[in-house]
Structure formats: structure tokens, C-alpha cells
Image (cartoon, rainbow, N blue to C red; front, side):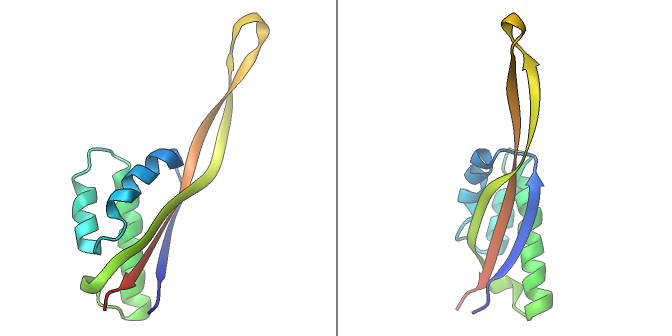
Length: 112
């Protein structure tokens, strides 16, 4: 059984928030995962949906897998680049604000 991967690099959302979205689609069939992501209230679900569609297309075109039998076997988010900015504080000091980004990995496998 071949595992097909897809990546979404430097998505502009913190990995902690992205993992909440990924927990909903892990272990689901691809068409079921797409339906869940379509009706999620967060706009960041589109980034995950794009990665799931890409993994399904990779499996279909590169490995001749049946797209109806694909399942999201693994889905995880890791740290991407961080944008660091300074914000002024009292007495001439400054704090660092970190804008976190995440790298999303979706792995699909064929059932059966």
C-alpha cells in the first residue's frame, strides 16, 4: 500500500490552531473530509482542503489509485517560519511579537 503525501508550506496560521482543524479530518475518507472542511466556520479550513485535494489528485494521477477509496491516514502540522516584530513597551523597552506559521502535511492511503 502506497502512502501519497501533500504539503502546504508556511500557512499563515499558528500550528496549535491548525491542529484543531486537522483532528477533524484525520482517519476520514477524502470525500467525507472535504465535506467537513467545506462547512467549518474557520477560513483556514480552505488551506487544509487544498492540501487534501492535492494529495487525492497526486494519488489518482501518479499512482492510479481510485479516488473514492482514499482515506486521510495522517494529517499533522509543524512549525513554519516565524515573523518577528517589535512592539514598544514602557521605559524604552520592546517586546517581540511572533507571527507563527505552520507547515501542513496530509498523507492519504487507499482502503482495502
